[in-house]
Amino acid sequence: MTDSSVQIRLASPTDKDTVCRVFHEAGLDTDAALAEGTTYWVMERGGQPVGAIGLEHGQGASLLRGAAVLPEARGGGLGRRLIMSALEYAQGRGDRTLYLFSKGGDWSNFGFQQVPLAVVMGDIPDAPQIQAYRARGERPGGTTWMRTLG
Image (cartoon, rainbow, N blue to C red; front, side, top):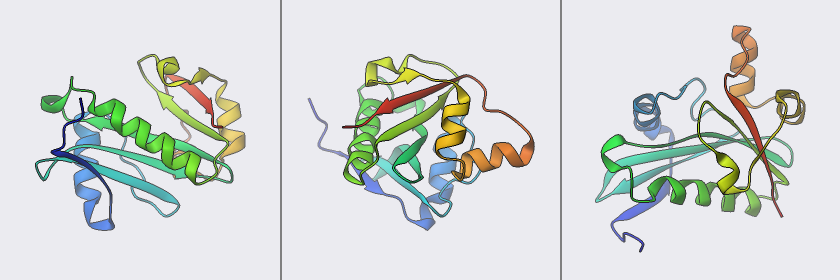
């Protein structure tokens, strides 16, 4: 059942603090959040932010940048709604592929498969998160995932 008090709206530059707070509480990196070439959304319940998600765009591919629901709002399928909305948006913009970096979880439930890091780095080298890792001389930790969009 869908909770009608929950809305997902496009984030504006004034939402950067909200997106960063939600990501921070979920232990996610906030470097380059809402940077140029990205699209972010804020999920609200009763007008209060409870989640956020972002996409960093390349040519025909995007990088899922954070998908987080505040701890007190978890367990009701809100994270799934955020992810499905980002997938639909990526398909609508004509992306053929969606990537993500994950430090945990099984993303195969969303149609993702594990791929080598080099695939992502080669396909969307200008994504803000990838540029931030390169600038720090780091590699993203965890697993790299890819989903082909139809």
